[in-house]
Image (cartoon, rainbow over all chains, first blue to last red; front, side):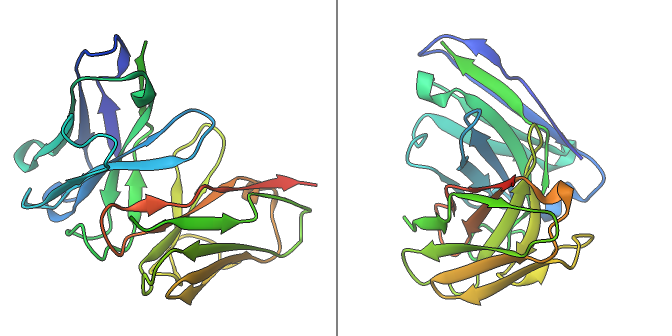
Length: 120
Length: 107
C-alpha cells in the first residue's frame, strides 16, 4: 500500500513537503509518480521519477516549483512544493508505476488514498 | 503535449447494458494507453493497460481496444458497481496526460 502524509492548509507563496511510504512490494523496482485532483474535477499528472532517480519529469504547471525525490532504502517518495499557489489546491495521490521507467509506460497500478493540500 | 479527448463526457445507462467510451489522442501513441475507474471518494483503479490488457482481478466484462490515435473501453453487462468516472491516460511520452473523464450514471 501507499500512505501519503504532509498535506494541509497553507498560504500562497509558502512551502509544503509531502511524503509517501510504500509497503507490500519492492519499492526500488518501480517508477513512482504524484497525481493530483481538484475535488470534483479530473486527474492531473504532476511529476514522476524512475526507479533509480535517474530521470524526473514535471508538468509545466509545477516545473521549477516542485521537486520529486525518493529514498529506496526508506521505501519513501517525496514531493517538495515551493511557491505554492491557490491553483495547487488539490488532493495529491502517490502512485506506483507498473514499470521502472517513465517513458513508454504501461500504467499506474497502485494508488494511495491521497492527501489534501489547500492553498489559501 | 499529447491531448486526450474522451467521448462522451456523460453517459446514462442501466444495469445490464453495454456501453462504449472512446478516447482520441492528438497524435499516435501506439498502444501506450491505460484506462482507470474512479468511484466517489476513492482513488482511481487501473482497469486496462497497453490498450487491451486486463489488469489482474478486473472483471472480464471490461474490454479495451484500439491503437495509434483511437481507443475504446467497452463494458458489457453493466453492474451497479460500474457506475463511476472513467479516465484514459497516455504514457507514450512525457508529460503523461489524462483524458477529461467520462461520468457513467445510472439511468
